[in-house]
Length: 336
Ligand code: SAM
Ligand code: SF4
Image 1: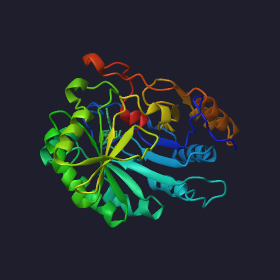
Image 2 (image 1 turned 30 degrees about the horizontal axis):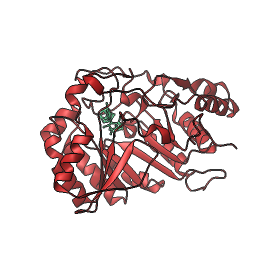
Image 3 (image 1 turned 120 degrees about the vertical axis):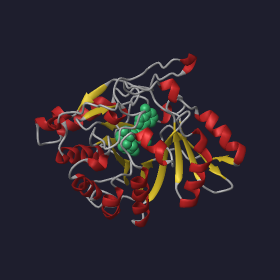
Image 4 (image 1 turned 30 degrees about the vertical axis):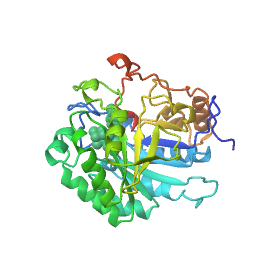
């Protein structure tokens, strides 16, 4: 079967799937405190999600990242992980799935880490912006730091490699740059910093939250020797090694354009909307073809048609002190 190639000759090998828009936290940069969630009937069932992801794998997707909302609060989610885990490493005929992974807030890891490891997940991303109890409660509104740290410990016990994702937040974790770096170095986690993106309406002002990674990197360089790594993920991350600790630190600057040319990814929401670019409104409905027939021909045709419209890049722009190119959906809708 011909693999998915977009109009700019980029092969699509990476799918991120949001399995729920719900979450047990309400992070200030991600959600409004009082969110209206989708009616459950609108969500794809776990069987439909499995069918959808399997179709992408047949079309050449090698890496699947499960996200949300909080993916691990979706009821019965392990049956989906089990089904996709079986397709890893060509265990099932015609399967080129090489990596199954998850981005989580960590709150449910004590319960699920071993199960994830058992189905073949090797590495996970855990979002953690601060190591301060009070600040953590403030940023996540409903989250508790101790539960997340215990979840991370459970993941380590299960043999999962944990990468920490921290959103760079002005006035919130600026003073924890070295504390977080040192904690990650001590516990053996890679650490990736993310710039705040203008997604969804909420109370806090984006420019109030924005801490540029250029500034963050310069501060890091005051204490450590940074060596640029050639490693590319096809996404907006760039990596350095800190020579003193040996750890890898990543910078995700989605607002810069320098990653779009190698973009290898698309995203599916929990209702089956396929977004070809995180920063554009265009999407394709995959739920209708999925439900129209138990055969996958229509679904695969809809996926191909959508990929043929993948745009060159996004239009986010933080220049001149205004946020342009903002998209109206929240990050929890498309999945981070
Ligand atoms: N609930 C899971 C978690 O927090 O890891 C998965 C979903 S969350 C939407 C995925 C990632 O997006 C998290 O690392 C989160 O910090 C990040 N994120 C959410 N809203 C963001 C925004 N407006 N700008 C940048 N990153 C954001
Ligand atoms: Fe939930 Fe993740 Fe969004 Fe925080 S960032 S509110 S944990 S989905």
